[in-house]
Amino acid sequence: MMVSGSKEEILNLIKARGTLQLDEAVELTDLAKTTLREHFLQLERDGYIIREFVRSGPGRPSLQYSLSQKGQQLFPSQESNMLRDLIQFLKENGNDEEIEQFFTRFWDKRFQRASYLMENEPDQASKLIKLNEMLSEEGFMPEHEINEDKVTIKECNCPFSEVIKETRLPCRLEAEFYEKLFDGPVERTKFIAEGDHSCTYCIKIR
Image (cartoon, rainbow, N blue to C red):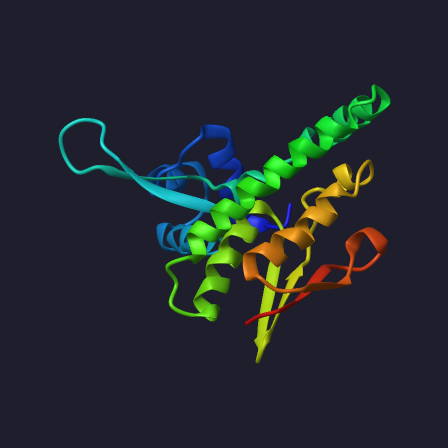
């Protein structure tokens, strides 16, 4: 897990219980309320947990925390291995066309979501912040840089690493995703699948 110490203990509690309130965390740990409050704030800022006010009767609603999608990804999962095995099975049974249709539809949905998030932002910097938030939720660990007529997007993690062992379709579609999103040519200068530490895309903007 990328989070350690007391913060990891909090995340484990939320995972086990579904939701967690600050007062519950005080009872379940040896940490002071002020310390826990700061940990909750930091975990929320880092995108691992989300807050929600829940009403369960008369009186003020209670503040509860649950894991975000990014938080869920910290815990072991066999989903990627299962999907890899599924793709292998489909390929062995001659279903290459269906595999391509599936991934194309998946990336179309990502493009639609990114476009929606970015469309009302006033400038390129704001648009990239929204895109970064989406990529972070998806587990890409993104970084970006704007330089005159070029945007550089660095994906430091590949959420599809097991899938790519069976098909490079996600790699091709990711480059096309950025071409459509920024309406300009894209050059991939680094590639995790070829041993680099990131997938880095340089995108000409108009």
